[in-house]
Image 1 (cartoon, rainbow, N blue to C red):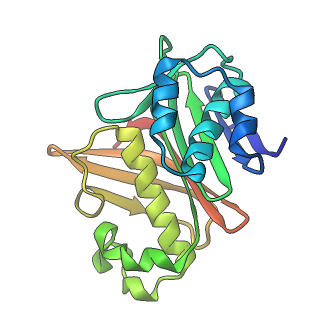
Image 2: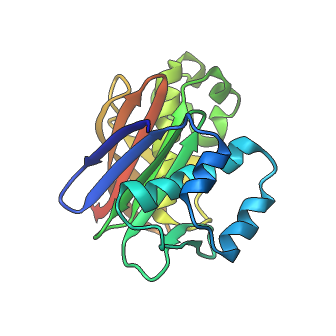
Length: 216
């Protein structure tokens, strides 16, 4: 089983990363999907989307120890949660990897993305030259991916749809490379919310997670 990472990031939160090498049928054999989950599964049009969806359910049920009977649901903003549980979760998947973060105390957000030049095509949708202090086109692909993952993690943590990546979020003091700790800012409704962000490099992927304890 290609469990890449399982670690306690602090006293109340755990993080797991799975390198997906198994086919769809293997994950299906390991899971007991209820009627609602089966309906959702059938709606996916590609095996890659199916295996990503199954992989993070497998992580929750078999890696972080929640058990095969848990049910992952989605709120009105499509944010996942564990039915009948106070735990906070966030999930992400990209290419060969699926990842989950779970916390008993605070909301969390996570994102993983393969470093790729394709992000330059959408960079002006989530970044500005003023925010980075340089032309976006002059940023290394790793730095661009770090900003994207950080804002995705913040968006998932916040859990509401009315956030604009470029207008409502800022990344503060990001590391020079891919790995490090830094801060994120959400500006919405006249209030500023700061969060701790942490980044890791996994092969040629960038992973960023956010812990939802706010401070000023």
